[in-house]
Amino acid sequence: MTYTRSITSLNGIWNFCFVEETALTSTLPDFDLISVKYDTVEAVPGAFDATRERIGKRGIGIYRRTFTLTTSGRHEITCGGFLLAARIVIDGKDVASTVLPFTKERFEVTLESGKHEIIIACDNRFDATPMWNPNYDFYAFGGIIRDIEIMNIPDGAVNRAIVKPLNLDGNIALTILFDKTVPNGNKKITISIDEAEASEYIVSVKDCKATLNLRVSNPTLWTPETPNLHTITVATDTSAVTESFGIRIVSVQNGRICLNGKQIKLLGYNRHESDGDVGPALGAQQHIRDLQILKEMGCNFIRGSHYPQHQGFLDLCDQMGFLVWEESLGWNNVNEQLSDPTFISCQIEATRKMVEESINHPSVIIWGFLNECGSDSEPARPLIKSLVDTIKSIDDTRLTTYASNREERDICFDLVDIISVNAYPGWYCGDLGGPWPLQFVKPYNDRLIELSNKFADKSYIISEMGGAALYGCHDVMGSQWTEEYQADLLEQICTYVVNNERISGLALWMFADTRTYICGQNKPRGHNNKGTFNEYRRPKMSYRIVKKIFKNA
Ligand code: ADA
Image (cartoon, rainbow, N blue to C red; front, side):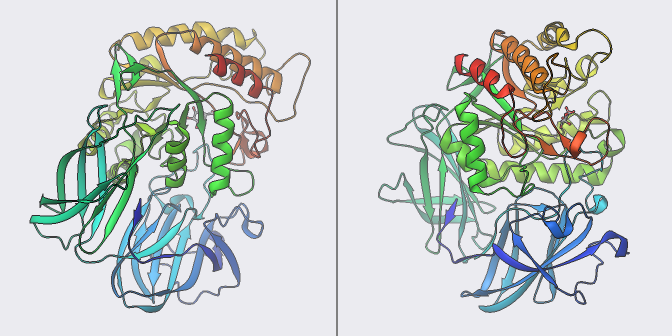
């Protein structure tokens, strides 16, 4: 979205100071930020523990810089994501904080025009947020990992123009969100679609919100093959917002996912926002690189594992025609966390913010949450229900799901639209000294199909399946951990999926190797090595195999 406001980017080089956990006795909110010494610099966006000086360290990273405003009054600081928790101080005063990793945050501050000092302290200790625990299978980096900016908020401003396509003929439902200074009652606005001449409307505002139905005069559908986008600009007398949107309808018919009324097979990968050099702070070029590779392989689907995605990445998915499953942060959370009130409220808030931020992206067709949670036990049910309710109260046009690894024991499948299963036949199952595990792929998948058929009206997705290969590791016998073994395994999985009518989608685990916790028998090099590419996007043997199958599907 773009605004006609005065916007100052805070990206760039910041002064930096790091206090390692061994020297820390306080939590982030209690930490004395005044007496620290800024003896080095860091890039924003960036992960402070992906750079040489602090690689692998835990503690509080403190960023400081100045900025100059040309406007006085209320302003909004927006940042696409902090890790793991952050506290913001402006001109010596605490103004905001967050414990929601990877979440786009918007903080309101009141400031005079002129020069100001901003300090942002990011804590990457595992207990900095109730949303994390140390056994998550992806590395917990720290820092201001996505773009940050500050913009003024004029009184009477319009904040969002949210578009829901009602049908394929160009009818849309528009929800306009206004600033809190806009009172209930009638308000004059102008609307322009696709840069046509703006028309005046009087809308009825209630609680800073107004809704109206409109028609796009020259509608072109959004599909992965033709990712046509439209724009809408809503203006008040003090500001305007422009948002892009796509006309496309997602549904489930006869247990199959449909896009614009036609069955579609989702074929692609799980992708971590992760790179061998910059950790989780990918820039536009790295996002484009990944999408170009996926496109070239015939993929149309990305599961954004396991947290809210970079908004710039979703913009690219809109433009390049990818279908996306976006999910809020979670990984194998079990009973103790699932019934903890703080964890629950963080989950709900993070999921709500994700949906609100990403709601206009046509690429996003599935909302997910709580990857592999304890969905075979009672405490999961109320939380899953609350997350579905939270999502549906904002957006009832997309499908909901969570990736389950509980198979027949799962007791929550009835609560969501899609049955999604993470399973590892040919990798985790089978005794490595026993029979060749590849032979399990078919019977295991046959069993999962039977399970999915118990929910015949719901669609079924394999949300994870795959196995590891150490880049450059080869063996004439194709033993486990070699590129040969991974290629054979992915060939079996992909062939099964493209030939099976019941399966609506496959997200292979995974696109590229990703740094994870350092110790663990199953994680050589401190990486999850199940990528078809290594962390620098060098292809393994499975690249050609998967590409061939997906391209011909
Ligand atoms: C799980 C999990 C992934 C990853 C994978 C693996 O299914 O959802 O994040 O950890 O296992 O590689 O073991």
